[in-house]
Length: 227
Image (tube, rainbow, N blue to C red):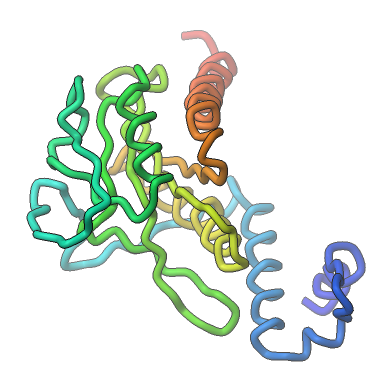
């Protein structure tokens, strides 16, 4: 571990704005560094030591069927379509960016259905420095990426404006731990994660993400041996 830490200090650590390596003696910053080293090791071992998800033993799954609540928030998106792609009648938006995403999702031909992760109970635990926190992704989108209607892609989407340091930890947690863990269960379908940071690029970025997943599917099938 000392060798790995020294290699990380020598090749990965970049000090800006008058900072210096000794600041890593602060426990919170040291823990952040350790978390990123651990994530790097985990990514390097992908395929040889798979991540497995541990489900809530009492509530392993959730459903939009049980969503029913009232709200005083005025920023909403009517999901009636056409065509309707969300059986919850309103998306409760936290920003205009999220309303723009709803417009893009409803207009995209490969989006089968989508929902806002509001009162669904989908929470992702992650570490930020020395703290344990919970991350609530913004949307879940079912995408037809070429596998057919019985094998849709579950795309977890985060709409991010100003990207603070904790956003990097959330993204790392989703891509390194959560998505591989759920996919390795092989009981809840296929999952992926996307983060959109530019409101005027959401439509292009979303299309690019769907196309990338479709291309990955073609590559996987092309590499399979002939029957």
